[in-house]
Image 1 (cartoon, rainbow, N blue to C red):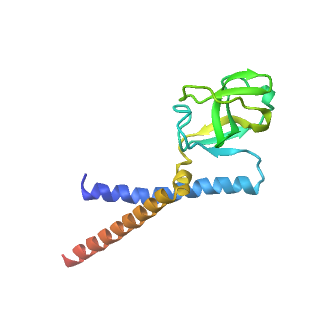
Image 2: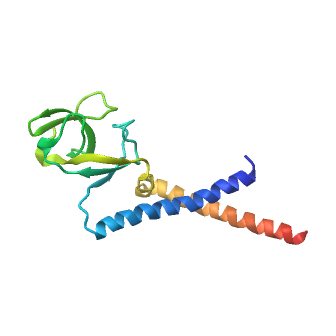
Image 3: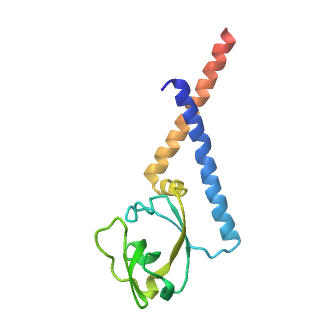
Length: 166
């Protein structure tokens, strides 16, 4: 790859990342402003691969737990935070779940821990939030953007000097 191709790719990254972040923030802000009570989560783990991947945005509704069927993907409060897994068995108002990528079932989910059912998956749009929530990745991203911006700036300056000297 020549410097021309690298220059073009860096320019695209420097422009696309802020626009993607802005789009996600605008949508989220509009939802907050309009008091939409739609639970939205960003997948962070691999337990639901390949159905749900890290960075996918999940939109939930909240039907009564008695309306949940086997095969539905639900969110619930687990021991280590929010868990998004598939229902493999319904026992009255208790659900048995398992991640698609896991070997064994989870502990039973009771009504008080049930949050909602996944109704829509927006692939990979939540990746910027995952990056922003990790200080190390955020630092690397910011340093990369600064270096790419400096590279583009000095490359343009050098091209102008070369064209003026001819």
